[in-house]
Length: 431
Image 1 (cartoon, rainbow, N blue to C red):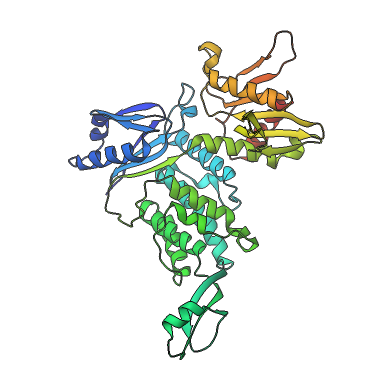
Image 2: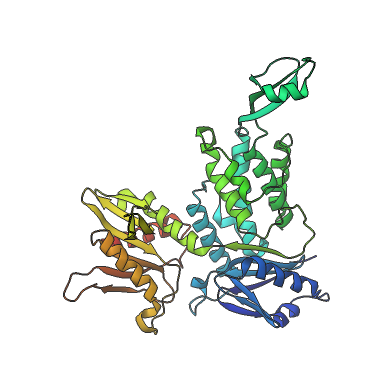
């Protein structure tokens, strides 16, 4: 059965009649009921349905209505007159988005050939699945992750330490010893999470290449226990030096699981599937990682920090801080914070008052300005149709304190040349 892919953007409206035009077989309205329930339960902050269609708010990702109908929602920053949506431009959008997420999650991409990514081969979700599977496959080829797992066993000899209370219950005749010990094994929570994720990816991908890689990984993980994971499963992972090589892949697995409508009870009979990408976080982390990676080229005798807390907006009667002020990016030297950058995944529009910058964002920057000893503040937005570079002061006849700028992400940002252009622009904005 050939997949029908419907392409739209954030902040658009998709009537059901447009969906029905794309399909050849009769439409089962049970899927719409299921979609409506799923959205109202978990996705009402980014999606909304009515009797005639789907209101798409700040949602990027995919919605599968049934086996042959898939809606892909692309980032709003590419939805303008300068971009004609066809297979070529859509492929470039995918490559850019793929690369931003890859950079944000700190997953190595040295083995990924972006030129081989053709949008006609699949959809946005397949790109992310391919990234994860390729990197996990390379790691596993070097050896499965092993760590110590606490186990209990009733045996003829002592392993580790005796559990006295359980030993009395289990062995009243003292014929065996019930003990607890640490076992260095590949059957641990990290590999169990990977196995669960790979199985789920294999079900949801349409690329034969992904299914083949998933099959090879699952063969390597055949001795690892099958578990049904929940959101809290990731809190059970013990972070130590042994996990360092797998940390980024575990972050990607968490990203994949927590951003989709997975049924943690293991019931995969439902047709409707949702995978949502939080572009606010992706954009923020992409810019942060770019500045950190190229800090030697961008900064002079300064250090860059991300999400660094320390100051509070107000204090209560016990002098306890309330409303933590945590800038996205802060640049510091021996004299303290010199520059604060706050990323905003919003569209600035030339013909709107103040180009669409919200009052709330300015109030937030005013708080940063006073609580961090008056550094220069930069509000950094993705560029839409035209560049924006506005300067303001918080007080009359004072030096420039606030810059509102945009960064152009419409080029081929996954190439070294374009990445360097972005780095040079960031340096220009910062200094």
